[in-house]
Amino acid sequence: MTVSVVTVDDQAVFRAAARAIIDATPGFQAIGEASNGLDAVRVVRELDPELVLVDVRMPGMDGIETSRRLIAAHPRSVVVLISVEDMPNLPSAAASSGAVELVRKQDLNRATLTELWSRHGHS
Image (cartoon, rainbow, N blue to C red; front, side):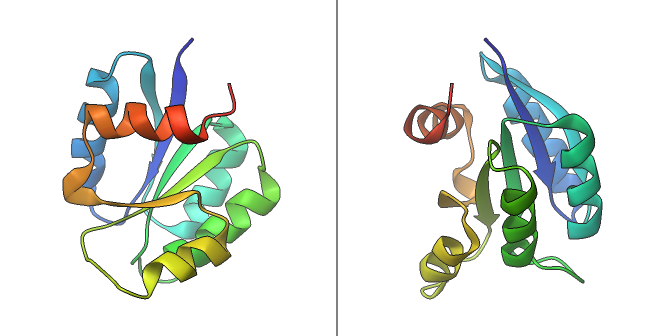
């Protein structure tokens, strides 16, 4: 079985890096991307991914609100917040968003994806 993944981040460089990591991870496939929260809602509605990686800090609708909206509309999708920053207050904000976990962008790799899915995947 292949886990379908959408990445939501305002930086094209990170989206490309995430896509490469996802596609290099056995059992995972990058099926879409969005550069902001509003696009994320549309893309997730259209593609119905199993896993969504959402950047915390984006212009307009931030990742916390994006996660809330995605989870409300698509409760089967596993939403993970991603951030380059270590933010001490973020774990509580992440929990209130419905996201299952917060992962630092620099820690995103093949092993992290596999571990995330083994802990939180619905399949």
